[in-house]
Image (cartoon, rainbow, N blue to C red; front, top):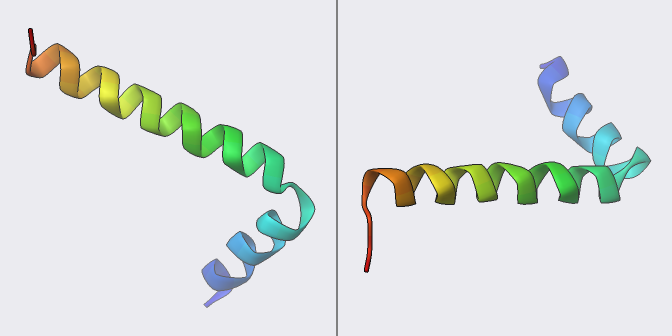
Length: 40
């Protein structure tokens, strides 16, 4: 149940860092998709 406390505290302490982490994850995910499926 402690897993529910961690994200809440993270969002309270550093929302900016969380945003950066999310954007980086999305970027890597898109890059992976592009490498697998090349759209021209």
